[in-house]
Image (cartoon, rainbow, N blue to C red; front, side, top):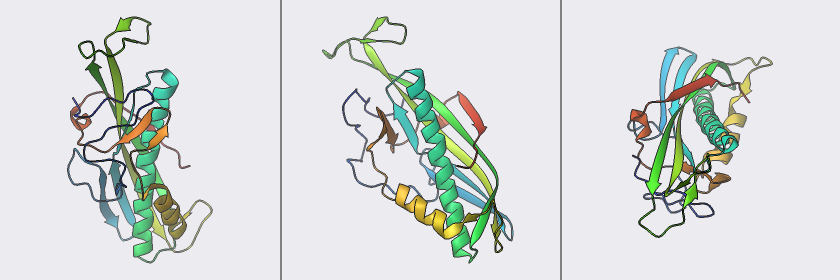
Length: 206
């Protein structure tokens, strides 16, 4: 079970060691339970980049809310991998780069918290039955991209400085603020990396 406070409707998320301060998302992956990137140079101008995490969590079990959280998790991992690709291109003096392949996956973990002995209100599950606990759903994404650095731009290429600038604006000051209705980033140590229930799909470049 993930060591995190359950998100209650209308309340702020409680994260260990995180009280609203900015989090540096673009960093090398420190451990399987953390978040960050790994990369491999496969030729002079080709790289494979893998970005894992951060997790996205929601306590809203409605189908649309769960789908939004999963989609947001995949989108975040992909864009952070994209940011790293842009950094590599800029550092090596290439103005552009191309995405040759991109795939995202998410692992899902459902965490239940029992409130029956704590004087909390009784919640209803998705079938309308009264229960004494509330669920939170965590999604841990992983994005795999292969890029080619290019000096001559084609129609589908990405401008490395522009992508780096946009992604930095979007993610350089990530915090535990809401990213959707009852949906948040979770920056604590992950237990999902050891969980079952992985689903994946191809992710088209935005």
